[in-house]
Length: 178
Image (tube, rainbow, N blue to C red; front, top):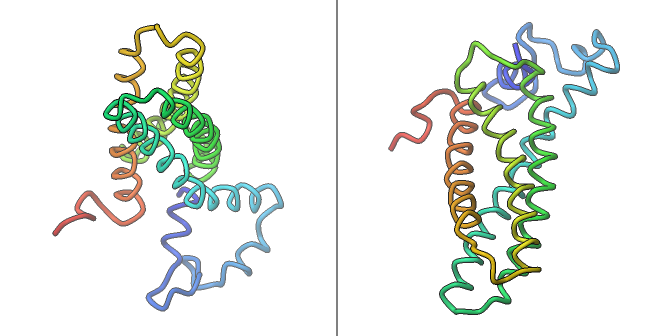
């Protein structure tokens, strides 16, 4: 069972943190080594860190579109900064996500496996986008077609990633049912 599964399985209706056997988390942690507690703690930070790169990547896409609409290249600089900070945040979120889900290359849960690898790819392509934005600032006459395609795909991938994460954390594919 992954750290996320264990954390979610141990919550009762009142919101008290209890593990599957009914013990408080503090009692359960006494049986764990320092390394196991550290891995669990780092995994729990994943949900706190993920929101910043999501906002920054989608915001960079919006800023780029606004700059295109206004025909003002100055917005590219703002988008570049957002992409750099978003890429750093995505690296941290992916790193912490591996702690949360466990260090497995494959998983029996297809949603978790897709979420794990899509998150890793978002971090990698976030770095690539930040690099491309820097390159285009130095040579503004270069074609930005590939950059725009990757930025659009990144926005789509983040939307899918958020849905998968919500599906995993909130119990099934119908978590957004109306």
